[in-house]
Length: 114
Length: 115
Image (cartoon, rainbow over all chains, first blue to last red):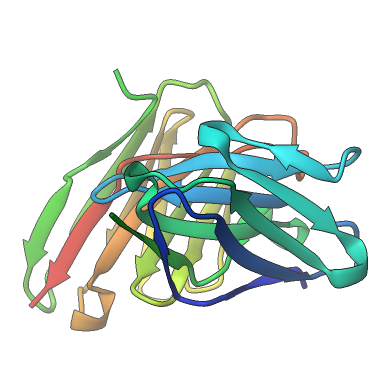
């Protein structure tokens, strides 16, 4: 079964600092991986996704993620954090055995300090 | 107007009551999903539907039922609510291609409190 593990339930960075949110996957087949963001009192919004092809994926709001098969990782990064990036971030993998519903990680709450 | 809407946005109910959460979408998608979100647990799949006649249980379907009244509408029912069903519930849709890489689009969520 496909699953993901997010390392760190809370991450705090200073405004302008690098954002790094970690996600490792477990899959016996090539995975399709997603990062979603949830702003306070809102639904989930797609940041980016990896399907096939280029391993460096660029998303919205300056975020990007790199698929590393050798490390089974799909970490999310942003060079310079902004206060508006404070939110909950979810890594997810598409699960073939449930109609391609998403198996989510437990989430990482990003705090950005002035 | 939002593509995926959920009603109500907030609901407080008592143990043993039957309640229904509704989801509507204007994206023309066939596939619809219900998830629940609990703090520290991420989102977990309750039910999913490929079309009006195709409904499937997800990881945590016990205590829930669903109805797909039309392509655009997918309702979640709690037949007899219990306190551990207190959670944030999300509806999502994806298009009809059946491919693993398709994006899911989420509604704004329904916050449910069971007393």
